[in-house]
Image 1 (cartoon, one colour):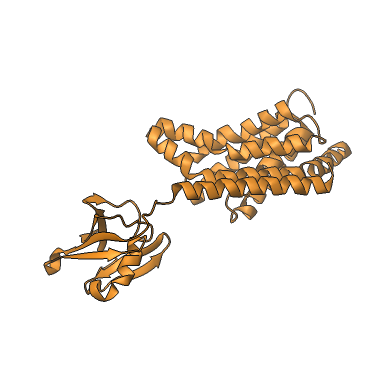
Image 2 (cartoon, rainbow over the protein chains, first blue to last red):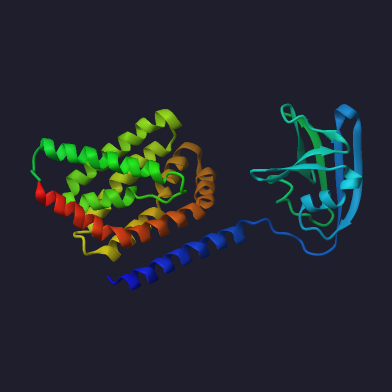
Length: 133
Length: 172
């Protein structure tokens, strides 16, 4: 087989792989809701007797965007990790990473992804609870 | 090649080839799912025959079992014992000589793309349907890379490697 033909076949194989990978990520990415949304953020820190609720209207697609927008209000502290950003502090209380973390619930159900991949949906309540490891 | 037991020379050659394959595996380990193990076992089977190829596949797999003492064992060991010998069987069935490079690329590409099927089957038995399906779906990007890279390496390297190995074989 001629070298040129091999190059064409190789490019076709690489293109097929790239298309498959792109399709996979497009299919598996969390579906976001466009436009203005009304959401509730609840912060529960039992050790400090904190249980506060905040209502926001936002155009952000993901929870991390809202947490950044409302940084002054929520006193959000976040860190970038291997799987995106994660919350390390809220309302001035920083989680001791060796002992505790901020558990996230969406309408009472555990979130399966971190804040950078968690879509904001109209009417939902996002609860951050400082939880022992 | 003799029909009975391996000669000392054949046994040594199988060992050396398996060791070289293992070395290439280690060198390419930083590149996720880009490997030359498939190609090397395939070439060895074409040039040296099915019996030698199958034995080399088992010797190589045993080397990876030893490696697991360092990196940790897992159900992938069982999958290796299925996949690498299976590749030599596929080679024996579909590839007869060094001139079938496009067919070799297709066999290697498909083998790479479906490499995780055996792992998924093992996970199906051990952990159930959902775990196996999740494993398969989450592995699609890696399988795509594995398939494409196997296809490309097969397309470019199958023939020259076969030629070189056959020359060396004929010198013996």
